[in-house]
Length: 498
Image (cartoon, rainbow, N blue to C red; front, side):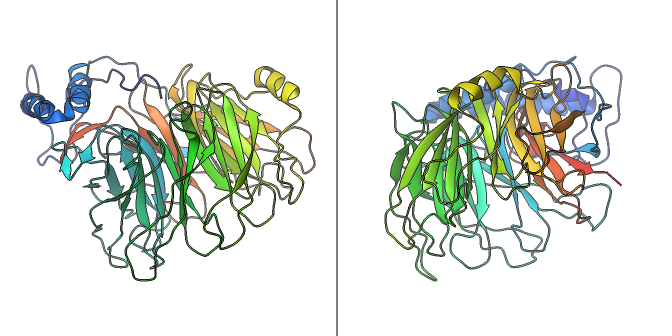
């Protein structure tokens, strides 16, 4: 999302849920407002202290974010535009850390419910020192009863990561059944680019626990991370999308060398050509050869690098063959079978607004991937065939059968809801063998409480009703320790279709 920080609305417009006794208004400023003023003043002093200890850029960002909180910000319209075949209730807001850049889901405590994890980019942990009150990772444990119309989560637990984490994934790296949290630290030059928090939570526990973060090297300024078994040895490896050319090649692969019961260890990193500034990263088998391939989308170079995996099973060094798809100012990217032909298609978001859908034309086992038509037709299609998302600066996409018709639908999030919606959901009616996708809608939904700030999107069935729901990460959120100064860092939309 650009810009990194945006103006946010008045701190006295909401009563924090964690304060007891409610918000009793009095003439002039509220009691809550006066309390928050004292918190802000105290925290600005803390940021000055942090600055003296070498954390000034991040400390300044928080101080500026709080200082620019202003009343009267334009609210998004109510949820639910009149088009499309989907329906979502909400949004329901939950507090996490400061500037939750990316949101992901996973069953952290293995109770059968998907939990929510955020990477909070305004935070820094370096050499064991953390900016006071600013944790890099937040975990919301899902406590929603099965079938409940309203989601509930335990209060967020926060953990250290690295310098300015902007990417997060949840995966079992040591084979014990408990998924770890993996963060990509954009503020790192690469030596500590990935932080891994090993999961020590007992199965079903209402309280999560993780070890202190262990770091691993990547390329310069990793923005995103994904976990997948690249060399088919049964262990989950790591892939990062980095700042790219000219600082590094753009994609780093770390093969998992962890021994059963031993400490987490990874080989590498091995670097592969991607592009400039990875803002999207996903994995999947695009040529149906049984290997996991990698796609990285780059805003600065307007390309999606498709790395077809040619790594022999069990080998100690990964190998890929790279091809490219050109998508103007591409941001988030995901794979899903849009035309139901058994091949994973490409869906990419664009900074300039809208999404691009490219149907997979790759032959089985081919080492060069092909999505859509030829390069010229694809570029023309960027103007003529892109799908508008009822907003601008479209940051992310996620794919699931939201309307229950058996096909993969698409949801996208907008950083700026102009003309009026943070989330756009497309109902997919593409037939098998179609030359182009057929998408109905989109239907627009409100997510963030602010005029700007929905920076990421993910999907999971939070209330176990068999229908995929949505969750967004909302950048204007500001929290100091357990105090939420600017609430609503995460929004959940519950699928309400019949």
